[in-house]
Image 1 (spheres, one colour):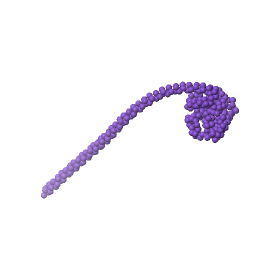
Image 2: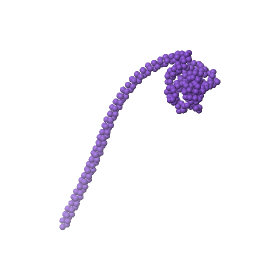
Image 3: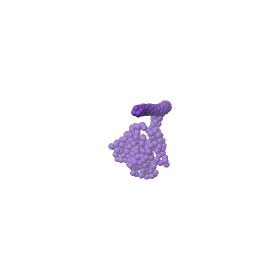
Image 4: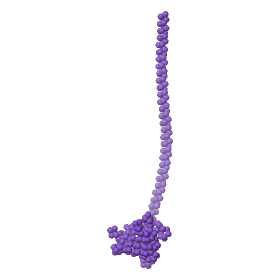
Length: 307
């Protein structure tokens, strides 16, 4: 009986041992399968990452390719525009060269014409003086104004005269002392009466005449005053024309000297008198200005010429 029990226990023990090793082998196989599955999943993940990277690269490549094509198109357009610009510049350079050549010819012709007209005016002035023809004198003045509106050449100061001579001849040329509807007053400072002036008499008289004409035009009644003085510190002769006319706003102090400017369209004239007066004065190394500090009812213009 003990033998039978021993055999049963031995069989049970053997079955337990066999079952243990079978379970252990099963667990080992399960762990290996789990490891294989984990490795497989890792490889799948790596492949997915590679696939994602590839797709990203492919997308970037497409973008780069599209940008490259756009860059090529832009470059082609730029080259085309540069070519058009070069052609336009060449055409402009050719046109400018032609215009420059024409301008050179015109300037030469204009210089010759000015010389001829200038000599003719000198001759006409002599005739006007000898005959006393005021209409001819006025015509000569208008012709001279055309050249003096935008004149740039210096005027030679070849006449040595009394400071008062410019005033006397300007008064005579304007006829302002013979006008009945206003009072004209000439005031000469004592030190100016005997002072000599180096200038161009014809041009200086013309400049002052325009200032007197301007005062005469805009003063329907009242007084026009011409003051003659000298400033020995600055070596200047000073001719001041004051009127009691309509006056000029300070804001227009420079505008009135521009060519063809007429602040009042109801008055006759071409709007060049003040322009010519300043042009002449400056080419004689002097100036003409509107005195904006004048507190009278009209206006005050000041002509200065170097002694």
